Length: 108
Image (cartoon, rainbow, N blue to C red; front, side, top):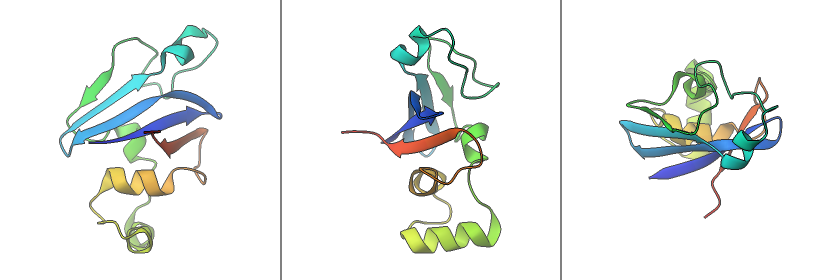
């Protein structure tokens, strides 16, 4: 099991968990939900108390990943399998992302 924290505009919005390669969970942080001015991370996952579950990495997070040769280079540089979507997300989506969402390894 691997976890990461999801930040929107530098504010912790929730946690993304990979239970195994076919079981993912995204849950909004209670503090984030308590501020009614906070937007959702994406349109496909509106704010709610119940966690979102999927049998693959959620499309929103998958779309944060590089493709093609860039993905191959990232995988080599970080010693990660090119097929390890969650691992590449953890390694690359912490600072240089296109949108307002960043990913950080969850605090243990």
